[in-house]
Amino acid sequence: MFHVCDINSNQTKQGEEGYDPWHKVRYVLDKLNAAFKMYYTPSREISIDESMIGMKNRCVFIQYMPNKRHARFGVKKFELCDTNGYVMHVELYAGKDLNVVYDEGQAHGVVMKLMEECNLLNKGYHLFTDNFYTKPKLAQTLFDHKTLLTGTVRSNSKGLSKEVATAKLQPGDRVYARCDNILAVAFREKKSQKKPVILLSTYHIAENVEKEVRGKVKVKPAMIFHYNTHMGGVDLSDKKVCHIAAERPTHRYWVKIFRNLMDIAILNAYEVYKLNTDKEKLLDKHEFVVSVVESPCGATNHDQPTQSARPYIPQHCLKLLDGRKERDCVVCSDRYSGGTRKRSRHWCPGCGVGCHEKCESNLEHYKRQARVGRKRRSPQRGDGDN
Image (cartoon, rainbow, N blue to C red; front, side, top):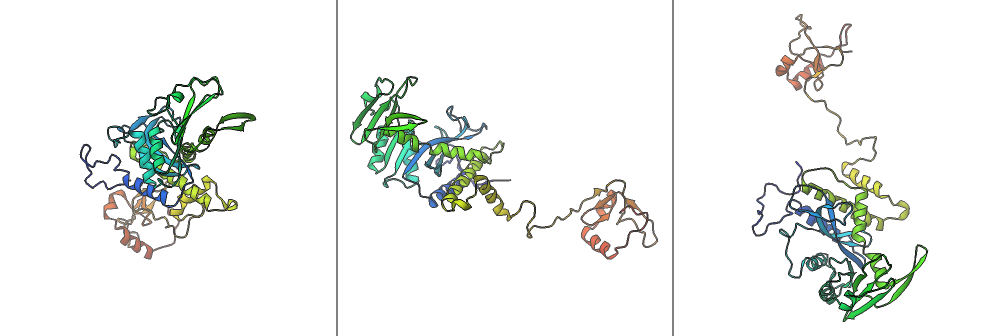
């Protein structure tokens, strides 16, 4: 009986204008996305990447991504995250047949939509993306909107310098190329690396940096060190969510999406909590989640119920007495007026009286309970009630 949308409303059917493939979770998704941006301002470095909600349900939204180790099958989503893993916006992907078609391609459209939804354009932010999104045209478009871009790029991308795309490098070699505001670099770190990695940036200059990594001094382009530091926001978010997740087996795909959104909301709440709490009083993630779960219930202790908790009220239904105990039938037994005494092995816990199964239809629970209370007697020898 659990739903997060109005199931009685007339939804637009698939194929009709205005159809929303995510209408079952749209209300919650929009509310959470608005709350994520309301209570948090991201740092300068942000990242965009895809993630997966693991499932193998029978629905048209299932995608396969072999590079996602935690969930290769499931619903694909695009996320804009801060460096610490805080999720600013979640956009679900319904597939090429149901999703919105962008004029400049899917990667370009997704980046621009997420940046517009978060209202981060024209503010000097520095965006990091992988080779699925990074294109020279996207870098120029973001630069025109006063937004910097750094990311890996594919060698066959349109507009990429041929000198960088076709460079044959030895281990440790690098090649730089600049076109207006965009700097490209190709770098091959070691012999086992068959192809050089190529990056684009509208922020960096052509410089190399020496850095000690695991006791060894390595010389790399500054662009690569900066990219490795700030690109993993979405992966960090997935890692934190998987530690304490509300995943449960279900055949309803939208329930798994809803639970994943709740996990993201808990994670974001914890990140805001850490920024507004002293380190001495800071709860760990598990304690924080437990406190959030218990807060709507009003529970303060696992063992002691609160005063507002209602006492247990027995139900009015016949049950079998323990062992060989018997009680007088409150309907047909008449031992106090000199009549016949009739005993039963069944009783009503709600009324606290015995009753035969054949007499249950004549038992008036509440009236009979008041009558028995007035005629309370001390137990006699031979009764099976004790």
